[in-house]
Image (cartoon, rainbow, N blue to C red; front, side):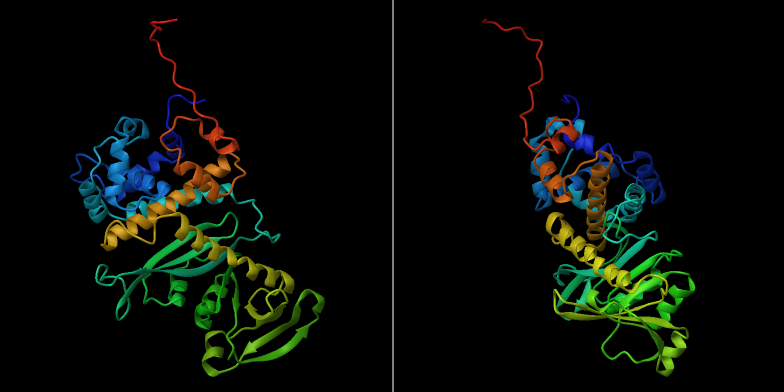
Amino acid sequence: MNLGKTVFAQLFKFLPIYEFRQCVQRYQGTYKVQTFSCWDQFLCMGFAQLTYRESLRDIEVCLRARQEKLYHMGIRSPISRSTLAYTNENRDWRIYADFAQVLIQEARSLYVHDSFGVELEQTAYALDSTLIDLCLSLFPWAQFRKRKGAVKLHTLLDLRGSIPTLVVMTHGKIHDVKILDQLPLEAGAIYIMDRGYLDFGRLYTLHQSFSFFIIRAKSNFDFQRLYSQSVDKTTGLQADQIITLQGFYAQKDYPEKLRRIRYFDAQNNKRFVFLTNNFLLPALTIAELYHCRWQIELFFKWIKQHLRIKAFYGTSENAVKTQIWIAISVYVLVAIVKKRLGINHSLYTILQILSVSLFEKTDLYQLLTNSKYKLPIEEPSNQLNLFT
């Protein structure tokens, strides 16, 4: 039984404070700051994410109601919605983006040996994007359609542990395929993409970097078959072919051979055609890897349902990006705690337990492992009883 630190303080103790201070110094986060530091801002916004607060006023009311707990939670400054609004508007969002990358690297090292459904030595990534709708009159910088605004989250997800290794935030008009230009290519890694990323020039750049890709072909795909390899049609495979591209521009953009795999999903009664530059993996493994791409859809669904990224506390681009990056940091923090403490619960279950327990002084491991919750024992008092 822990009688000293709140659950909130125990949770955020897993964060590397030194690296956070380095991120703050990198972008001059302490410039002309006397009260309410970047760390105070991060803790308040992290509290809002964990408890799904609706507004800045909501954050202010909840934290002020437990004023006696704030110091032990690590928050050293008075809380007000005007201060929160100002800091979200003016503190550089890159502080929290860089710090999220620090947490991501730590999480990836913890999940590096986890299985994701396919036995594979190489690292496998899923690349996709999701839209967050915004009101164009309130967010004029988030251009999407004539009368509609949106932010697009382009995400590269490590399938081991479902850790987002790269997140690029743009307005809704940016096409998905342009993110391939910003992709940090890793030799030997496998990048799994939907057909929205089909650009042979960019895929050839990925091929020249000794990386592999698996991507769905479009219906009007023009090719010439060189030869076919035998497949076991009882597994759903229909064809495994070595091909070259047809068309002047396609051949110019990708002059080498490709592998074309046709697969029929009997469960969903749907046919898939995949293109890859990997000629070594079995055809069925290629199909199974593409099926694992669904993890990124589940990731988008999870963060939209359980974190505060569909409604925002501020309307400026800086405030929106700050909120999203802190939300990602909270997601990765929960994943780190789950792994370090050896918790068998899902991230959803852990988040639900934390959301109603942050002010308590229960041991974090006991809280997350006990299926039957025990009421905390009252702190012992030195006052003698008047009546016995």
